[in-house]
Image (tube, each protein chain N blue to C red):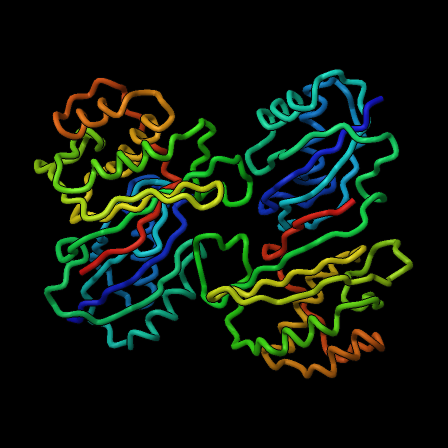
Length: 242
Length: 242
């Protein structure tokens, strides 16, 4: 059996998320269907990251085992010609048998985009925040996040995870004209964690609660303020390192 | 009566175009409906440019006469709170009685975006051209376009226009990473003209026909090649000068 690795871009707007679900269109489902159409095989398609409905990916990675003899370049062309236009396969590679899109990942990078001006064009790719934002407070929060922390409080409930410690290697806010861009790299992420962090940081920066409350969330896991998760449409899975 | 001028951004993807049409959602129709809801008036909403289905605008201008006494800032807020999220009003101003969004315009600027890499994210805002492109030929074409020419051959049929002369003040191709961006400013544009020009220039640059054929289209209005209109989704109405 060959082990095939895919590098995938998708526009999350019209998907229920990465994972196959009983109702609705999933990225995993569309790609599995396309592979079946090409190879006749019902493969187990493993995605590195289970992105939520509305979340986008420029660098999702998936792998599957296959008997197909089709060369990787042809497989790429065939997939892109079958797949709907909100999914694009950027590369197809043959990888060693033990490569696992989820377990082999060393670190992942997400980016979150915010605009301070209401826009129509590109509105599915950015969160419009109308409040005045204290950028220095965003920078302070990003510094606090960096390092090993228990992020349970920022994640969404309902998964079987028991270890909530993530090692954040890089967390930074940038200003580009009227845009605010948050980049975060960590060894792993909890379900809903980036959106929870962005929501909390924006709440600090717009003065809804003090930075001390944020610190306590991070250090003592004490939740004194109601946590607001930032909307899905501003979030991008940018890159996965192996 | 006050004369009210609107500066409008819209995502053309889900519209039949600017103009009200018997079937389908139009930008003009949505804004007229919102004005009626706010002022009770059935206004004559004059748009500067009748953009086609799928064409976007960052700088569409419209005006209407109204009895309303609502201050312009409140009118802007009210419109944005009622309008669907693919239309955003960026400014509302009171202008002299003789201002007419179409007839008072001195020049308009359009931009056309092309990507050479297939993408999922943002695909409604750019044309994917898979052919190899000779950028120098694009630049040569842009130089030829500049100045006063009869552009009938590049426009779509079916309008009542009799004068096909447009004065192109500026025409330029730029390369930004894997993107090609065409900017054109003229005193006026014919129906479908920018998409006709972009289609022909790309045909020259990918080697479908020679630059001499393009020259003859422009100078002698001789159509030796079948003209291909570039798709609507790459086109943006950027700015209108008064």
